[in-house]
Image (spheres, rainbow, N blue to C red):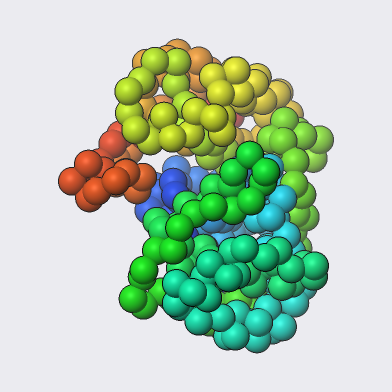
Length: 274
């Protein structure tokens, strides 16, 4: 990956980790990473901002999202042409939202368009699996340029992309690899709005499964960096005798700016401990 340019995310993503990249780079330091794994891909800010020697194994349970990255990797020019056909109006937004195209590349363009023009960049579907986020009334949405899509496409060339559960990432993890884990934040007892928002996406039982995955990553001789909510129950569940770093972030989910504020987050890692 030494000859591939680092890239900025091309999607708005609630809980995205672009702000965390400097801390992650500091944690990694001079450690040589073989392969990179990210089973909660989301906005992909960390993948796009790091370097490694081998291949990237990227996954997410959101199959629509994975399809977008596949289209960026394989057909970024055609994708950009389709994106240029969309306009930022309420009428067009709801017309696009109401229809699901048959072709993957058209669905990918639809996804990116709605991501940049919807309310708050939230991905949400109803019980029928239909995207139902309202129009965001953003005056100047920053749609990905052709050059931005090209750069991300280049980053994805030596990557595998799969829509799957995070536990399956263990199949390809080996010594010297790095696994970055950024699950939706859910804790055992917490009244934080961000946590409540994600409860249906990632249960406490999922957190327990994730803790077991961390154990298996360590057994494989690999590195891990886990981002999670700053809460006593999380600290206890993920206490593996490794490093704990406390960070601060601006809460991006909430009804108003005054209600969002900032919150602490935990980073657990065995980089420098392994």
